[in-house]
Length: 151
Image (tube, rainbow, N blue to C red; front, side, top):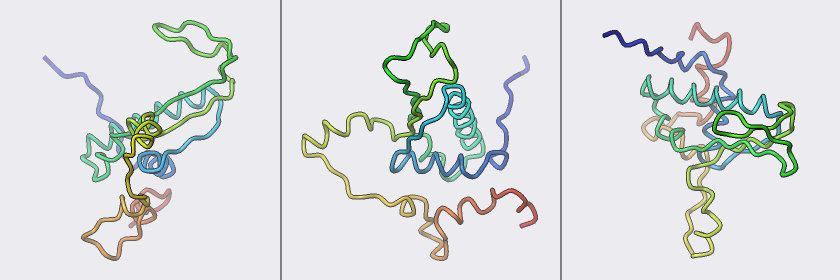
């Protein structure tokens, strides 16, 4: 029997800012406002990028595998059923898209219980310790810049 599972797009086919957003969300958290329809599309592309990273055994996959992407709409939003879920009736409703490390919703109770971590700088997480000349995030994303195929 043939496996009809489609292979993910290559990591290079995704925009470098999408990769940067996932890395920032994995370490510091990131949120921004956008329409519901654009938030859903962003989440879909982020999950596709993560699948491509897993498939290619990307060095930063283990970092982006530990994120949660949430779409939060205002409390007074009119909702309609969509399968097993509800969604805003107006797809142009302004929502907050939040990218955060898994289990970050427990931060306040853990902090209250006295659990703390040292401050983590994004470049500390994505620097390759075996390459002292590495330029952090810019170095990681260098090969993903549009028009740099000749490098």
